[in-house]
Length: 219
Image (tube, rainbow, N blue to C red; front, side, top):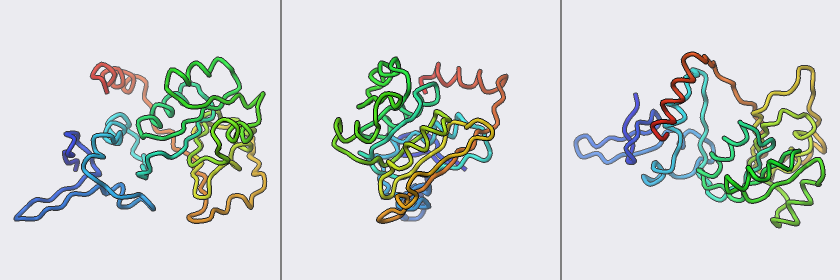
């Protein structure tokens, strides 16, 4: 059952109880997420979870929330999926946002989405570019939308001590991922995590008209 949040949207994770003098409000998504942070009513106005739930009919969809404004995010592969991920990172107040691709033309895409740094990993060393341009040596969240075994192997070592690596792009059948220097996966606090995403159940005849309606509604 979805309740209406302080921002006016219906969300299955928001709960409130003002019955008989009670004064209780909470985000159960944040509460059940390790290191999820502290919920406050103003966060609902910035949260995109209600729109994600409304736009995705997959019964296996699992969401995790961490309230960490200012986290660094790297998107590997700036195609259709990567562009969406970059927008989501900006909505989440991530900073800096780094885009990695093998095509220089993607630099203009990153600029149009207000990204902070573009790296062509076919020409540049990613770790050296991060240190030179941003003064950082690791990244809090890395989202791979490329499906490239090489790019994944090259970017996993760049995770921060409690960083999260999310696999969004599908690898070619038979490909394997090399983890270079696996001792670097042991973080100083929570440890690093690597997760794959679930693609959902897409029905073009039903879902495309649904997405068109969402776009026309400004969502």
